[in-house]
Structure formats: structure tokens, C-alpha cells
Image (cartoon, rainbow, N blue to C red):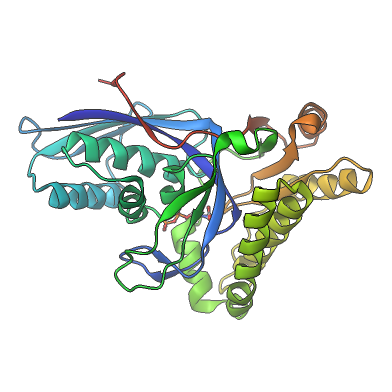
Length: 329
Ligand code: 2P0
């Protein structure tokens, strides 16, 4: 009853922001992301009678608090599999945790696949994304290869709110996302709390919802047509709209720091000069710069020379979650 899985982080081009059901994690809107090959989490899960309770070790540190979501997810898997054994969970990520870099996405995707396999369940990809979604919404997209769409769904039980790959990684191998790190510390307001506050108090949230379907369609088409300008410009505006809703909640949530703005202005300036790049940001100060392979080197050089930039991590479209036989313990 031991299994290991690997999953990549994903970066949303059209953001998931707001829930219509918090216990099932059903989103108010659909979202589209790129699964990122460079940023992964590997997780080993073992269920055994020898464990008196679930133990969670992330990047060599045992989690003593804040593990409610992971424990709840393990209960969900046990219930589905009809087993009672507790588990030892060991997980490692190769990128900053909780800094707006979707560590919960790769984490919950790897955890779900490893736990499902260790528990002896056999689920197809759609079922796996639905189960993963209940651990953390954006994680459902990390199950899928290349470019993924997580559907909003209409049903109250969430059975039609799943993620699927809309283009495999080989469809557009030139697409790049340069994660530009300006802060590695844990953020003050979690995405979960931030989106709840937005739904509850932002006067412009309706505007977000009214415009998101057009954004989804544009990015979906742009990916299929490999139209970089369409994907980049829509993604950039979508990220700004999401941040506009956060900034206008009560109290305001402003994730940006000076270096965030420095990158945004620089990218806009470079674009005017003919170097085509776009930015997107999640619930944190780090900026992800979208570009094509031909401009990756030049952009990395320019981004690295900006004040406040700690490092850049370059990602191309990556694999979906997969099992591994190299266990962590
Ligand atoms: C996204 N984010 O689409 C958006 C953009 C952050 C900003 O999905 O409550 O960790 O576990 O479902 O998935 C982060 O939210 O939240 C997120 P839960 P999650 O990537």
C-alpha cells in the first residue's frame, strides 16, 4: 500500500478566482493553465496499520499545524477506497512554497495520485481531477498534460467540474513561462482566504464573472491556433482584472511589491519596443512572464538585471501527473 507520484505546478492563463461551493471546491468560473515542466512535487504515500495517525513531511519538515486540508483529503481517499489505515506522506518540491507559485497545485495533484494508487483505487483521469479538485481547486489542472482547462460545471454535486488537457505539451513546445521570483517568503493572505473575501466584499466581482467566458474562449482558441499575441494579451488582462477585484475588497489585498510593478512596466516597455512578452501574477508578488522560445534568453537576461529580482525559472508546457517507482522512503 505504498505509491509515489510526481506532478508539476501549473500557471493559470485564465484565473480561478472565487468558489460557488467551498466544501466541494466548485469554482464560480472556469480556468485555463499551462502545466509547467520545471516546477514539480514528488510525493510518496504509504497506508499501513503500523501508523497510529497520518504523518506529513514536506521538504524534510514534519507538518504539525496547517495540515487540516491534507488530512481532510486523506479521509476522502480512505472513504472512497473503504480502508481505515493511516498514512505516512513524504513530499518534496523543487520551488518556493506558498509564494504564489502554485505549490498547493502540484502538491495536491501528486498527493492525490499517490494516495489513490496506494489505496488500491483505480480512477480515470477525469475522476482523478474531480477528486484532486476537492483537495485544492487549481490542483485539478496539474493532473493534466500541456494546457489544461478546469470546467466550472453546473451541477451542485460537482460531477461536471473536472479538468482536461486541451492541448498536449508537444502542441506548442515553443511556449515559455518565466517565473520571476521577487519574494520567497510565505504570503500573508492565502488564495483561499483572498478569493472568499473577494466574493464576499468586492463590488466589481460581477464584472469579473461577466467577462471571464470571453477570456476563456480567446485563450482556448489562441492555444489551439498557437496565436501567442492572443493568448498573452488575454492572459495579461485577465490577471489584471483578478488583481483589480482583490485590491477592491474590504480590507484591500495588495500582493504586489515594488519589484512586481518594476517587472510589469518593463515588460510593457519591451513589448512597445518589439520584444513580445506578457505578464501574469497569481496570489502573490512574483511575476510570470509569458514569451516564446526565440526571446527566452534575452528576456531572462533583462529580467535578471531588474532591481529586486532574485531569480527566474523557465518552464515550458509539461507532463501531467504520473506514477513513479522511486519512493521517497
Ligand atoms: C489560479 N489561484 O487559477 C488562481 C489564480 C491563485 C490566483 O488557484 O482554495 O490554492 O485550494 O481551491 O487552488 C490558488 O487557489 O485554492 C489559485 P483552493 P487554490 O491558479
